[in-house]
Length: 115
Image (cartoon, rainbow, N blue to C red):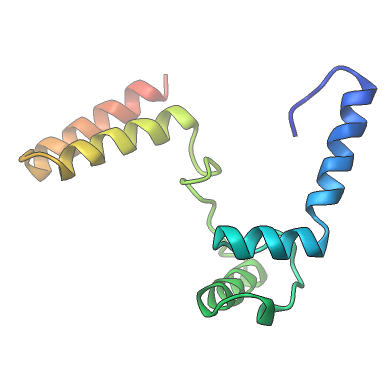
Protein backbone atom coordinates (compact mmCIF):
# COMPACT_ATOMS: atom_id res chain seq x y z
CA UNK A 1 0.00 0.00 0.00
CA UNK A 2 0.99 3.59 -0.48
CA UNK A 3 2.14 5.48 2.57
CA UNK A 4 -0.67 7.80 3.58
CA UNK A 5 -0.75 10.60 6.13
CA UNK A 6 -4.16 10.30 7.71
CA UNK A 7 -5.32 7.53 10.00
CA UNK A 8 -8.63 7.51 8.13
CA UNK A 9 -6.90 6.72 4.83
CA UNK A 10 -4.79 4.04 6.47
CA UNK A 11 -7.92 2.49 7.92
CA UNK A 12 -9.52 2.52 4.45
CA UNK A 13 -6.44 0.84 2.96
CA UNK A 14 -6.56 -1.91 5.56
CA UNK A 15 -10.27 -2.43 4.90
CA UNK A 16 -9.63 -2.69 1.16
CA UNK A 17 -6.77 -5.17 1.69
CA UNK A 18 -8.94 -7.26 4.02
CA UNK A 19 -11.77 -7.31 1.48
CA UNK A 20 -9.71 -8.15 -1.59
CA UNK A 21 -8.01 -11.02 0.24
CA UNK A 22 -11.34 -12.66 1.04
CA UNK A 23 -11.66 -16.07 -0.66
CA UNK A 24 -14.81 -15.12 -2.60
CA UNK A 25 -13.22 -11.97 -4.02
CA UNK A 26 -10.05 -13.87 -4.93
CA UNK A 27 -12.12 -16.56 -6.66
CA UNK A 28 -14.24 -14.19 -8.74
CA UNK A 29 -11.44 -11.75 -9.53
CA UNK A 30 -8.95 -14.38 -10.63
CA UNK A 31 -11.46 -16.46 -12.57
CA UNK A 32 -12.34 -13.35 -14.59
CA UNK A 33 -8.77 -12.09 -14.92
CA UNK A 34 -7.33 -15.47 -15.83
CA UNK A 35 -4.77 -15.38 -13.06
CA UNK A 36 -4.11 -17.20 -9.82
CA UNK A 37 -5.09 -15.98 -6.36
CA UNK A 38 -2.58 -14.09 -4.26
CA UNK A 39 -4.09 -15.91 -1.32
CA UNK A 40 -2.55 -19.33 -0.68
CA UNK A 41 -4.73 -22.30 0.18
CA UNK A 42 -7.54 -21.63 -2.30
CA UNK A 43 -9.22 -24.71 -3.76
CA UNK A 44 -7.57 -25.25 -7.18
CA UNK A 45 -10.75 -26.92 -8.47
CA UNK A 46 -12.38 -23.46 -8.56
CA UNK A 47 -10.03 -22.49 -11.41
CA UNK A 48 -9.27 -23.67 -14.94
CA UNK A 49 -6.51 -26.16 -15.75
CA UNK A 50 -3.82 -23.54 -16.58
CA UNK A 51 -4.51 -21.76 -13.30
CA UNK A 52 -4.38 -25.05 -11.39
CA UNK A 53 -0.97 -25.80 -12.90
CA UNK A 54 0.24 -22.28 -12.10
CA UNK A 55 -1.01 -22.55 -8.53
CA UNK A 56 0.83 -25.87 -8.14
CA UNK A 57 4.05 -24.45 -9.63
CA UNK A 58 3.82 -21.29 -7.52
CA UNK A 59 3.32 -23.27 -4.31
CA UNK A 60 6.23 -25.58 -5.14
CA UNK A 61 8.54 -22.63 -5.89
CA UNK A 62 7.50 -20.83 -2.73
CA UNK A 63 8.18 -23.97 -0.69
CA UNK A 64 11.56 -24.69 -2.28
CA UNK A 65 12.70 -21.08 -2.00
CA UNK A 66 13.34 -20.57 -5.70
CA UNK A 67 10.39 -18.29 -6.37
CA UNK A 68 11.54 -15.52 -8.71
CA UNK A 69 10.05 -12.01 -8.63
CA UNK A 70 8.17 -10.87 -11.72
CA UNK A 71 9.57 -8.20 -14.02
CA UNK A 72 6.10 -7.83 -15.53
CA UNK A 73 4.73 -6.74 -12.17
CA UNK A 74 7.74 -4.52 -11.40
CA UNK A 75 8.83 -6.68 -8.52
CA UNK A 76 12.21 -7.54 -10.06
CA UNK A 77 13.14 -4.19 -11.61
CA UNK A 78 12.21 -0.53 -11.30
CA UNK A 79 9.47 0.70 -13.66
CA UNK A 80 11.96 2.78 -15.67
CA UNK A 81 14.13 -0.28 -16.34
CA UNK A 82 11.13 -2.41 -17.26
CA UNK A 83 10.00 0.29 -19.70
CA UNK A 84 13.47 0.56 -21.23
CA UNK A 85 13.66 -3.20 -21.76
CA UNK A 86 10.16 -3.33 -23.23
CA UNK A 87 10.92 -0.46 -25.62
CA UNK A 88 14.10 -2.04 -26.96
CA UNK A 89 12.57 -5.51 -27.30
CA UNK A 90 9.50 -4.08 -29.07
CA UNK A 91 11.72 -2.13 -31.46
CA UNK A 92 13.82 -5.24 -32.14
CA UNK A 93 10.78 -7.39 -32.90
CA UNK A 94 9.22 -4.77 -35.18
CA UNK A 95 12.34 -3.83 -37.17
CA UNK A 96 15.29 -5.29 -39.00
CA UNK A 97 17.63 -4.38 -36.14
CA UNK A 98 20.36 -6.97 -35.68
CA UNK A 99 20.59 -8.95 -32.46
CA UNK A 100 23.98 -7.39 -31.77
CA UNK A 101 22.64 -3.84 -32.18
CA UNK A 102 19.59 -4.66 -30.07
CA UNK A 103 21.82 -6.04 -27.30
CA UNK A 104 23.91 -2.86 -27.37
CA UNK A 105 20.76 -0.70 -27.26
CA UNK A 106 19.42 -2.81 -24.41
CA UNK A 107 22.56 -2.36 -22.34
CA UNK A 108 22.54 1.40 -22.93
CA UNK A 109 18.80 1.72 -22.23
CA UNK A 110 19.01 -0.20 -18.95
CA UNK A 111 22.10 1.69 -17.83
CA UNK A 112 20.42 5.02 -18.60
CA UNK A 113 17.16 4.02 -16.91
CA UNK A 114 18.98 2.91 -13.76
CA UNK A 115 20.47 6.35 -13.19
